[in-house]
Image (tube, rainbow, N blue to C red; front, side):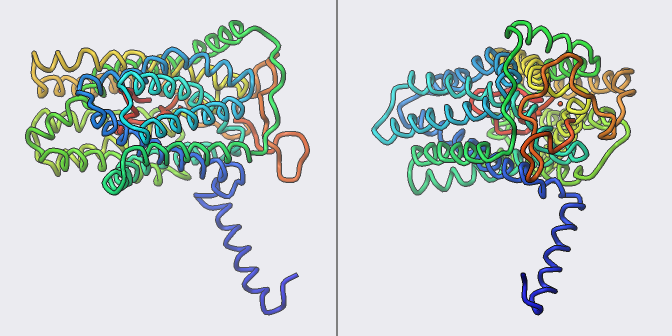
Length: 478
């Protein structure tokens, strides 16, 4: 019981808390999301640091540019192969349980790599094997994230949560490489890899603290579950339209941008400094847009999301025209803003319309489709650029992005998809096993604490968005 003189201060504190809960950042006042967000931001920062450290570690162990390419590619193939299985397991066993397993695996993998680096100069094959294992573990985390978000966030705050998850990714892309550079300068890459392992420990603890119920026992075979997810995916025209859009986008636009930007930066933008400014501008645009999106509820969310995709081609055009660095950086900021817009609203639309029990499976199908062709882009873009030139290839990328976005914008399923109020959100599928890990309300012993409401992604499942300094080998966007 506060003393009389303490009552005004206590009342002010209570008033500030009420303002936070009702304001645009009210989602951060929801206990489970705040706990998860803390662990997620920490883990993203560690991963952004690790991708830089891995490059220097491979080169420092005597690896060539080709060896570095092999290590990067080793993480992509398992990501594509195991993504569908990760979605099925997340819906069968519970999203949090699968994500806990993924974080525990990634902690062990990165701790093993750090130990090998502290002990000496590991062979290149060890880097490739551990990168492949890390990619496989990532494949089980991303689909679970799409399904977990509606379980720990009130339906009315889903868009805010998705926007803030995108902001976290962008902040990590700016802060991670900078911190990695400092740590590598004063220490060694092994220290950064060890810090990444520790960051997975923080994420692991955050997931363990979430108040969610265990998943119900699976009632059918995994194949039946996958078939059910495929049927749900096919039933939403807007979803397979955007999946096809991003599968081709990753091949024709984003893979060329990721591969050719550093080449052109070295040629005329001032080298590494110019490249760093472009990458920081991408992330900065995404951060600014993500914060502006919090609290916004557009009546036609996929129209706004598709308008955002026009921004992806702007930096490709700027590079194709060899515009000066300030113009390229500004174009990159537009691409980042468009990425944040698309990811936040497309993820929310999925979460509003796909039954909660099917979210991880549908997200896994979406991400697999969006990633598959982008991975192949790495193999063909370099030789093709040698033949036609980087400028022409990036000019085609800009033209394709503009044309494809314009076509998608005219399609009826995109234009007719409207924002759903929480009461209109889709219930669990008829006859489906209840969604796993329904959250507990404060002080409750059973029953959901939030209204169930999913992509990307990356959201990239929020999966990572364009402009990301990609994880080793990643050339995809969602």
